[in-house]
Length: 233
View (cartoon, rainbow, N blue to C red):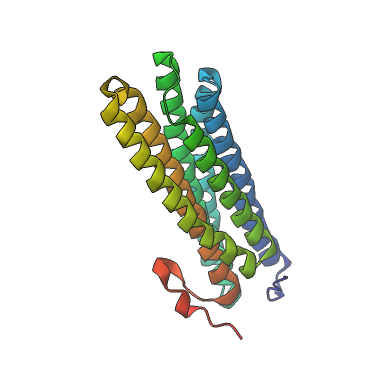
């Protein structure tokens, strides 16, 4: 699926629009790598990799601020309308979600360091790997849908968040039961529960990115479950 934006008298305007889109996708690649490294750091008890994840968080924050500034300049200078304005707005909204995904990856990295310091592998690593694989796929598919302006792919990816939520709730119930049976595991398993919570939140943010794909291409706001706003022939 392709989306064709209006051609402008100003070639620079087209370059500005393409530029912020490229910046956002580069930020998305950084964040996706950060999530993968955070999970690997936890799974492999690699505190050095976890520290690298924490270091990258500052770079991601700078990317969001730069995108906000570039978008503001485009609006002020070009006064975009219709699909052009949606492009600018969707980029800033997605950048916000990407920054928050980066925050969640940093939380996972901190949990990895804490669990490494404890020196034992707690119950729940299987659940972490399962949920991590699901949300990483959602994030990559959401960014790919944006790259291709693919509403159908975005809607399929968006729907996957329901399964992520179900898997998260199931894992929490199992781990709470385990803590009740073995109180000595409480401190370790709580860190796992926080990690699972961060992964579930990453899935929510990936869903938000999919909603922005629909907004960009169709001009429909389907946030907060308002899929009825999407008019399809």
